[in-house]
Length: 174
Image (cartoon, rainbow, N blue to C red; front, side, top):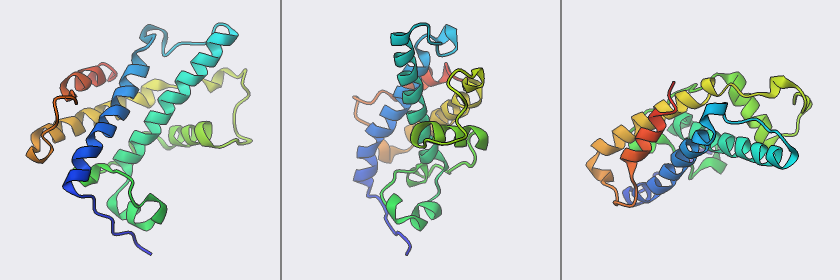
């Protein structure tokens, strides 16, 4: 059964606030302790906060990957994705893959699956190579913002500040 959901222009204008939020959270979380490669845990309470921050970054990465990589055709083939927001809703082509599959698989397992392939907690290979994950997504976010800024249908409320966000995202592209 194919899903034929088509968001209205009002739905698209309304959801831009949520898209902005996802991009903003990614930018803000990645800027914390930027000089220390997103930080490393030093003591138990710090380790818990460090892990929570890493998981928060990965959650926003995963959400933005779905937004940028999912095509209308793919969304139509999965009934449980019927109302997922995708970049193609805004006339912005999807891109696949935005990051390497090894990182996507690891993100998926780290966030939502308890698997036998998880590295031991003490294993230094658990480290994330953020240069392979964050810059491609930040770059795509900037392109999307530029696309939206040019489209008169999506003239936004002053509450959504795309320009400042675009600048923060550019700071993540190395």
